[in-house]
Image (cartoon, rainbow, N blue to C red; front, side, top):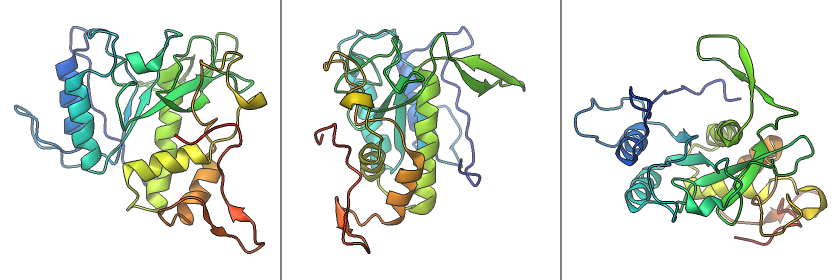
Length: 245
């Protein structure tokens, strides 16, 4: 946990409990400090944006063009975008924003570090993190206080967002692409080399390894792999299970 981080809450869902593409785009842009007509300026632009939602109001044909344009603007501002893969046991690439280019899409794992059975999957997923199952849920804080047990991709993505914040605390100049690279290439391999018995139902590079990612950020030189360490061994955390993306 980055104890120096400031949490910025941005409401995306309307008062009628609806989530529209326009509201999601405006929220994403405002969170990054971009101008949104009719709203006051954001005095605390976020370096890491966690988007634990899926837009069910747009066709499941990939990232909506309006959302991709917003993502591109936010990435150009230097903000990292972490999103949830979705909970439909389907290709994540079909969803918005999980299927957008440049975001870090996160799938949840079960207690064996396998893909949670409800999780979306596929090439759009960057890496995985614990998200709970019906038999073993994860503990979360309630908005009004106290704790609760939940499961879902919405609870896996914030773990990666927290890790991204730690990387930026070590190296504030890291670009969104560099943060994604470090997180993916320091991820722990899945048991047996894949998260699901069906190879097509992939979950990215592996399971989030916060300690390895932070160590990698400390020695990041803008390229991969790093030069050899003091023992003459190459500094490469790339999991043997996965090919480069």
